[in-house]
Amino acid sequence: MSKVLDITPLRSLIAIADNGGFHRAAASLALTQSAVSQHVRRLEAVVGRPLVERDGRRTRFTPAGELLIAEGRRILDAHDDTLRRLAISPAAQLIVGVTEHAADLILPPIIDRLGESFPDLDVQFRFDRTRRLSDAVDQGSVDVAVFVAEASERPGSPIGSLPLHWCSAPEWDLPVDGAPLPLVAIEAPCTIRSTALRALAGADVPVRVTGEAAYLAGVLNAARAGLGVALLAFTGAPPEGLVERFDLPPAPAINLAARIREGADTEVTETVLGVLQATLRTGSPALALTA
Image 1: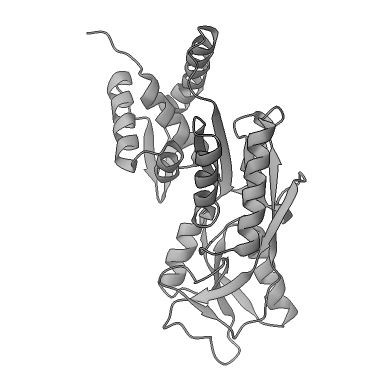
Image 2 (image 1 turned 180 degrees about the vertical axis):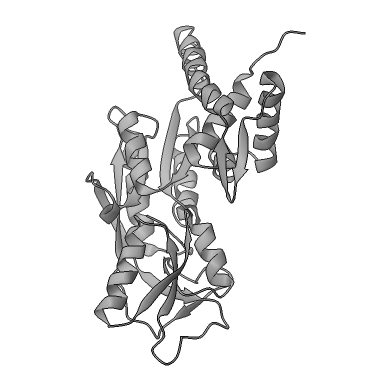
């Protein structure tokens, strides 16, 4: 029996590469994580070799996986171009890139508004850190990128700001006898991490970074486990399992900005920007954010 590389599993594999993991890939494709995992297993059965492997909490591609990603992009480009040439192109697509966990506040109103105004539009999401999202706009793989303005070398359109709050596990206490404050944070470079260190240094609070993570989930887990305090950006209630602290020096809010891919649909992107600005003005659902 001949072996075939199906289009749908290839899209899942590439989404894992673009979004940094199975969970975010599944969200961007509106699939379950188990469906994305099954797609990868189908591809591995075709090529006869592993494509991804775990490296701690991260997903790492094998050499065969890296090769298939590169070839898969060319296959998908040719597939989609053929559909366009035959005038049977799929529905217009919008890819929105947002910093991790911004979905809690930003994504629901975007989905609702675009569903009302552009019902035939295929909206997908990509979750990543600021610099990679900005690069994706320049590369044409993201139409709208929402990011922390202070973390980007490329300017964007201001859309609002978010306050920063100190959080810890409910039972966690400040160190005594002048011991350094344990801090958990995103690994450098990270705007919120830098802001936390500056705020503490300005108040002459000694600090020691006791936990680092590549993504926000690791920081939240470390703080919940009592490894230290974390500086988080959110509106409303703190993330589940954490409490806000008011016994540490305040930190300034961070600013959010958006960049639009050159050539993106103006009507659609202006609608997205309007929703973002209105949402950040009201800021109802809780939001946790990394730079």
